[in-house]
Length: 215
Ligand code: G3P
Image 1 (cartoon, rainbow, N blue to C red):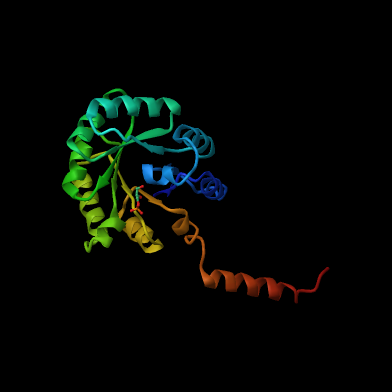
Image 2: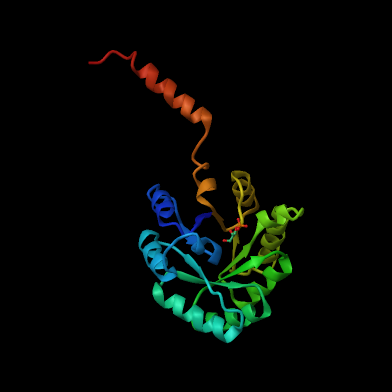
């Protein structure tokens, strides 16, 4: 299972990359807007820090403009995956970018039928937003289960990228369901290595070690 950071903050990416277990990065226009830097500058730096897919989202809404914008983003670095929103224009753009050899992450997925269409259009990743479904009074994880089942039924190679993650339980449940990738904010990622019993256990080991006679 691949673990991605959902951020445009280079310091957060640098920190998790230094742990040696970061597989990729996803960004979106809202995350980029939090940084006071140009999108291209951020993407170039991120691609230098992470050896894996880096998602960069288009802001055009008509297919021809999405395609042109996607081509521009893809030229920045070979690891760029163009993020395209789930609309009929987005499906057209995904098909066209795919035929040019550009990989696409289709985003804003809230139903398994939307995910099925993304797979048929040739998306490399689909990004279901589970936290926003939970916020809306639905069970986001049920969507992951449906998409994983449909993709397995038809042997689609499109990977399920679980997005809009709010807490570590989302990560565990996605792993149990066999999702390919989870992308999460730094606030969730930094909780994954921690457990209070690990800290307590280490403290005890180090304290007891003081009692061992030194040679
Ligand atoms: O990057 C897309 C997704 O992860 C957004 O999450 O927290 O804004 O629902 P959120």
